[in-house]
Image 1 (cartoon, rainbow, N blue to C red):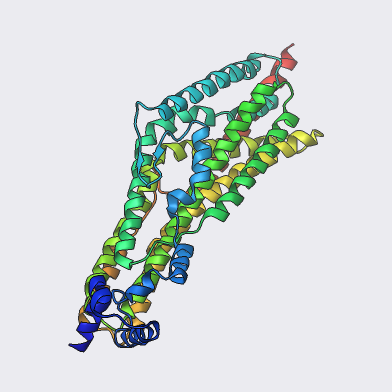
Image 2: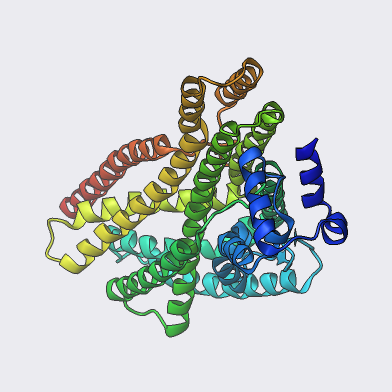
Amino acid sequence: MAHVTTITAVLNGSVLQGLYVKSESNMNIENEKIRKNFAGEPWVVPLHAQNHPETTRRRSSQRSPGLQADLMPILQLIRMMGILPINFQPNGEVDFKLLSWITLYSVLIQGIIVVTTVITLKERLGKLADDSADFKENVLEISCSLCFFPAFLGLINHLPESGKKARFFKDWGNLEREFRRVADRDLLIWLGRKMRMKIVKSCVVTVAFTAILLLLQRGYTWWQAVIFTYCSLLNNLMIDFWVLTSDAFILTVEEIESALTESLSKKHRATTTCRVADYGVLWRHLSKQVQDLGNAMGYTYGGQVMLYFTLQLIGTYGFMSRIQQAEEVTTVGFLISAFIATWLTYVFCNAADRATKFVGREFQEKLRNLLNVSTSMDAETKAELRTFLETVIAYPPEINLCGFVQVNRGLQTSLISSIVTYLVVLAQFQSNLVSDDETNNRTN
């Protein structure tokens, strides 16, 4: 009863202020007794310490801004490029309205980009109709023209999926609030520094890639170079966003494991069982978010994967066909193009593979370790933990692009196998062209 009286005095501000007035030293002694008797119970906190300046400073320094606020610079940059017509409210709410100024702005920007790209491609690809053009020169022209392909993804893939992307961010906000309710603390995900480094890297790569284009192909005007820079930067930023979101999944599951371990280590176990069940619901929410990443942006990234595949194919073929010639600059350009496309494909597939691995298999191992290490755990809590583990095993998370293809490292292996097949076909096609030219020369 003495403990109950003390807790009531601590939790009830009016009782503390009106009936239980003590000096600062006596209050500190009483609070120390509470900590010793009720160690590990998060709801027992000295009332006067909650508003202490040092406590407030420590909590504010540990408060995570959330995924949306963490990625806001890159999201705003993508929005400026007319790709993400989503309204991000200061309170964390996310919505998409078809009839809004941001949607009108996105459609206008994408319309300008598409029209200028069509004019550029009509001019550049018109050279392919010239009978005097060499087959290898045509391959080089097609390879450079493919880099303008992201300009069409805005109207075809990005904008139609804006509603699904808004729901993805809204569900992530719900996940953060659910974690705060279950774990009694914020979901700490710090991606700001990594995000800024990736933006700088994308800008540097974009400038380098534009320089390679102007070095390989003459005749591009300044506004055509601007369109190419836009397409290249958009492509790099979307890959950065994919990687950062995948990292957020990994950090989140690590936070769930940390909070679950902390909850199981509490001395008071009256609510441990229900908390294990809550963590199970929290993990299922995270697993759904992992799958929703591919469902919400499947067509967007599906188009980019197709672009990478084609660039790898044409770049590799161009390098192999020019390697025996003296045109070193063009040969190196083909090689760089193929390498960049291969690297972007690897980054894309590897990020998804790591996210599903950490949320699935790695988390299974951590749950098994908790079952084996916790010898003092009661039977009911162990049963809940086993049920949690069975759920993780039965429903492993996976990322697929709208159900068409699963994204993991195996996807890149399949793409490389297909590239080898198409290279053989292109080599045979070129061989037939050479044979036809020799036959015509003999006839003439």
